[in-house]
Length: 227
Image (cartoon, rainbow, N blue to C red; front, side):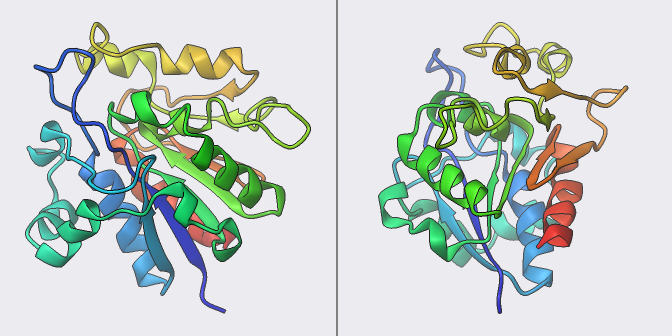
């Protein structure tokens, strides 16, 4: 039976300050997409509103703009997938074995309060499917509650982009909140690597999270192993 992965991308193209563009961090999509494709998994891309997912300009520059990202960016068919993403109400969670939230600072704005994404995530998680995220993608898990009203992340080990990494990336004054702190407030056991920007992924049951852009491949491999 072919495994199916639902990948989540953003619809947002800038910070609160419109003069600062942001969007999907491309390699966080392409690294995982490549891992899943190698294993023959079917993949569908969804976003909070459906339609276009803009790209984070910083993800299209060295050292983040690697072979998989360049290949995607140069492929009209691949880029078309980001122009025509599905909306949550078009998705039946029963069709998917895993959900994977990509990052980029843009997701801090549209992931947390998407009731459609929360529904899909809860349904996949509660029937034993894999819920996963990388980098800022964990913002998509902040407000997701289970059927009993508890936060999905409460009492579970989680990682995601660290506040120290925000400071080093010089965007700590631009971001709308401290995602690491918000995750802790919801009762998650937040973990991070000793050094910033190195690959780090955490598995807690059927919850898999990666810390930063460099963690996308490791995160996807851990998801694939569980599937």
